[in-house]
Every structure is written in C-alpha cells, then in structure tokens.
Image (tube, rainbow, N blue to C red; front, side, top):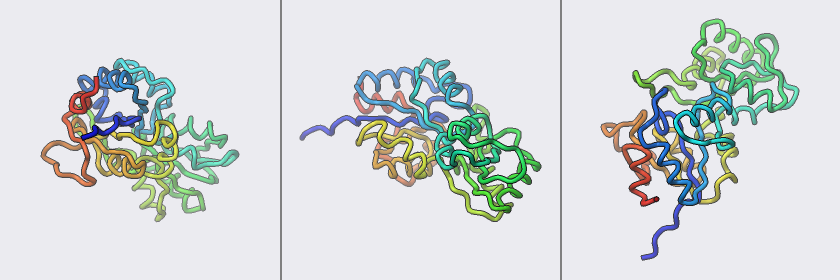
Length: 255
C-alpha cells in the first residue's frame, strides 16, 4: 500500500496547543522544530485578538519558537473587514487596534462609527458595552473577533472573546460578522500560505475542527486545552487525536 503523502502545511492553534496561559505545553517547541525539519510549512493561527503580531511572536520566542512572519490572529482577519478611511470603534485590545490601523481605517473611542470590532478585553465593562451597543444601533457594522466562549488558563477556563461579542450582539439586537476561526475571513488569511494539503491542530472542535473543514485540511485534536479525554467523542470527528502536540508528531512518525 502506498503511504499517504505528508501534509505540506500545519496550522497550529496557540491556546491549549502551544501554551496554557503563560505556561508552555511540554514538548511543543521541539514538536514545531520537528515539523519544520520534515519540510512542512508551519503557521500559528489564534482566535485571540488582544496582542499585536509582534507581541505574539515575542511570546512564542519566549517558549523557544521562532515565529517571525508566521502568525495570524483573529484581529488580522477582522482588519480585512474594514475599509480605508472608515471610523472603527474598537472594544478590544492592541491587536485589533493594530489591524484596524494597518487597514487604513481610523480608530475611535466614541461617536459615529462605520464599524464596531469586539474582541477579548479584560477591561470590558458596562460603559464599553453601552458605547458599542449605541454605535451598532446607529448603523455601525458589528464585527466579532471570534465566537469562542472561553479559553484555557493555568487556573481553568476564562471568558473568551465570543462571550463579549455575544453581550454586544444581545444588547444591540444585531447579528455579528465573525472574523476568526472557523469563518471565511480567517480562512482567506490562511489559504495560499501553506499549500493544498494540511493539518489544523487545535483543542476546540467547534472552532479548529470546523476551520479544518473550511480549509479542506485534516483535523488533529489535542487534549491539552479545552477538550479532555472525558469529552470524547466530539464533532467534527478528528482524523488524529493525541494528548498534546509532541505526541501527535510522534504518532505521525515525523523526525
């Protein structure tokens, strides 16, 4: 029997795959190096939107992974949904501000806006909710960085960007355009970067698994993040399932 060709590219989630909170998942840096030695292209795609690209690259470097030019965030995708010259109310972190400015749009904190982009923000409060709601009710497009309700940390799950998007959507009685995994804006960011055969590695079937389907890639589920062994089986069903990235690379026989 002819062996299956090795995937030409790997799309790696960050939270729950490379790290949990501030703690690196053991073996993840070595696993990335082994993937690269096999000749595969590697990109890091995260639904987190709070950090700038340079900040994400720096955090990856701090755990031993060189990711310069290889990071795509949900903020990156959200920035594709605004136009030069538009006024954008940002309810999120520096990552979204960076993406809006790179798109040639103007960040505003109040007043008339053409779009509102909501992402994870520890400082989110009733005032931010009110400003976003009023802007959307006045005609601004509502853009969500992602739909993830939570993300893993060392102390357990914390509310994700999707929870904040849902709050604004409920208050404004609006349906958001969601930029992050598994939606088309971030699919567009990834397509063409790493070839026609690939693997999406993630810890959330509802984002990473569906993202793999949207890219026509294989889905590999790791149990080092949100989903644990007790949660199996999941849908969509992964082609591969492993405790962590290092074990996954072992299972696939990559040196």
